[in-house]
Image (tube, rainbow, N blue to C red; front, side, top):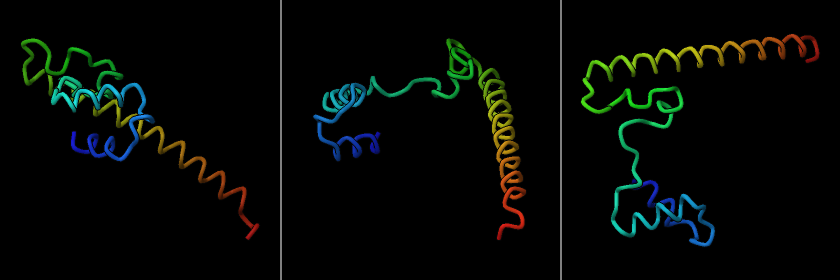
Length: 99
């Protein structure tokens, strides 16, 4: 919250986006309604709506959902690193002997 406030302080109100205008009004009203509740954006995008911190949710369900999130993110990271390695190898082969 402090970072967002500092960010907005350094920007002219005439340059605010719609979201920044909304957050600025919320900060001036000393409201915390704009702060995220329960899940992160990443968790929502990976299909965890309602699974983390839901109504009457148990800590076990949260742990399971977080473990699944970690597994999915790990798999995505591994795939990205593999593609990066392949590109580095291809670049190394294409520049071999040119130096």
